[in-house]
Each structure stands twice: as C-alpha cells, then as structure tokens.
Amino acid sequence: MVKTTVFFIMGVSGSGKSTVGKLLAAELNVPFFDGDDYHPDENVAKMAAGNPLNDTDRKEWLSRLNSLVYENLDSGAVIACSALKESYRSQLSDGVLEKIRFVHLKGSFKEIRDRMQKRKGHFMPAALLRSQFDTLEPPQKAISVSIKQSPSSIVLKILEHLNQN
Image (cartoon, rainbow, N blue to C red; front, top):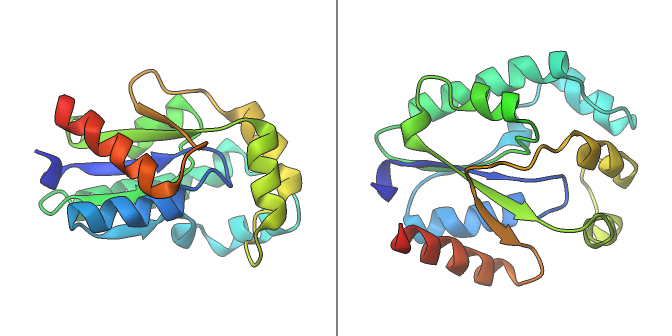
C-alpha cells in the first residue's frame, strides 16, 4: 500500500518539507517533487516581493499538484507542499483521497523563523512566515511530526507510524 501512496509533506515555509520529503522518497524508492517548482512565475514573484499568496493565487498551483498525484498513482511519490488549509488539502486530494497521506511537520514560530533567517537562496522571505502561521489549519487526519529532531529521525518516525497502521 505504501508503494502506491502519494505523500504530501506539509507545513509552513521553513519547516523542512523538501529535506524530509527527499529523504522519505529515497527510503520508499519513489520520486520526489518539490511543490515550489510548480508555482506559476507570478506566485513566485509575489512571494519574493514579500506579499503572501491568497486562495485565488493558489488555485492553479494546487490543480497542478493534483495532476501530479494522478500521474504518480501507480508508482507512488512524495510531494513537498505547504497545504496550509483544509480546503487546499481537499483540492490536492480531489478524486484520489484514498491514495493520499499527509505528513505535517510541526514547529513553533520561533523555531521556524530562526531556520528561515539562516537559509540562503529561497524566494520565500522570513517576513511572510507570520502569514503562513495565520493561514495554517492543522490537519485532523495526518501524521504529525515535530521538527525538533533531525530530518533522518523525522523520516524514521514517519516510517514507524506507517508500519503501525
């Protein structure tokens, strides 16, 4: 079942979605996709200018990622995507809910702000972190893992959860 599951590694910017997602994909031997790579250029420019995205901005992006799920149903995949609201998660899993698992990387505002201030070369400025926390609707049905541990330990926690369920 895990092999044909598409995992969304979700959380606010700076929570480690891409790092954890790549490690999990390698462990499961499935492809990894970074949701940031699927944003329209206008979205990237808007965020880089320090402006948060709204629901309208995200609509096309979420549709692209839902298509990516369909393209990888047979092989499974890991996709890094903020998936901040329940409505976004519904769009991502539209028509394929039984094939999707969300993994929520949780951390405090301070922990993640500190991380974001240290990273280089990402279009998402730390100044937008508050808007991400304000938008976040923690998922009810997700594997939730604290970011207080190493990325490899987070992957082990995810795998332990999968083996227990």
